[in-house]
Image (cartoon, rainbow, N blue to C red; front, side, top):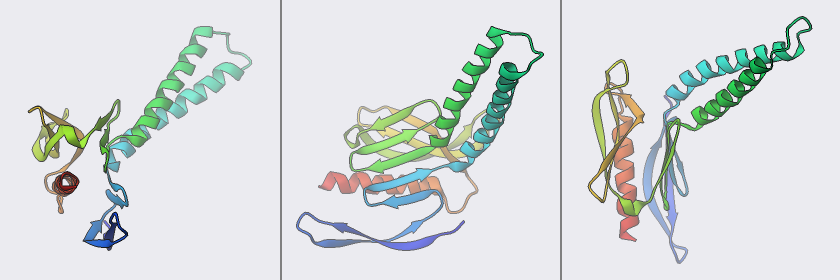
Length: 187
């Protein structure tokens, strides 16, 4: 994994420049002038290959169903293949965007396979790294837990990592989210 150190600066209301400090940037964490973006690409790649192959097979079958000269004209098969292509295409689009957290001044956006959560900083209380077995294999993973102002909490298990990974990227994510919430509440 390639890391590089950069210096971030922040521009104030009256044109003054305040140095924020050295920040590590990895393949999972990208810092922008408006906040940062955290991405877990491994899950998306595995699911993308699986659904991409399924999509390619459906497109091939659909092309054969529409163009083969000796094939019987089966309308239900053609419609089913077209619907399957549309659903797999939508899933591939969602997979490419899933496992992503974007933090900015307006709030936090967390994308998973089926849903995009848009959370305002006002409704967020604090962030926590939680480690426990998740998924069908029950392998212990560390993931992000968000606590809300109303006392409830939500696990975002799509943003997970191995307990043995060093450096701990989920702990770094929790630290950065807490720092960003603190700096925005001071303004």
